[in-house]
Figure 1 (cartoon, rainbow, N blue to C red):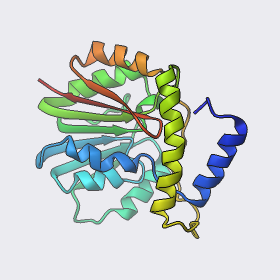
Figure 2 (cartoon, helix red, strand yellow):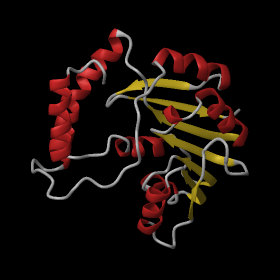
Figure 3 (cartoon, one colour):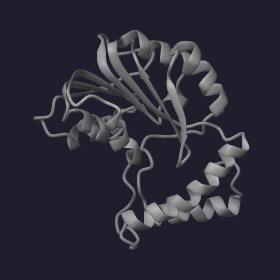
Length: 218
């Protein structure tokens, strides 16, 4: 979003504060469509408040959810019914990667905080043959296509915020979220490095300043 002027950026931030909605959760249903109807073990890296982990638990026998933030992990645990097969853990996603292998690995808006190629290599190592990896990430705008999508996302963001809040400003404060930082890698960088680690990965630019990566382990 660096192509936005400070004035436009401040206006967008004020709008999002009044009409909040989760850009990452917008992709959760899309993620589920990339996955089998049932699977055994799933891992959600950068699980935040646990929304995606709880959705995965509707299809998985067991879900491990990992986040480096102890506060938001505790919040996720409180929000999760005890009957769901989800285990939340505070850990570094690379240095303390959960042992074992998984049929599904998901990672939403987290990989830009981590060493990219090393993290993908770790995912590949722990993904079962036939398993599916789904990443929703952020990239740094560089090309004209990036900037055009960014401009389209501004209008779409306003529409989505308005619709999800039914045209009324939110009476509640925005819920706690983990710290974020801007992405350093461009989309072209991501495609190149991912191709080296995960041959055949399907990578697409998306709205709301995101890209998606889907890889099926041979």
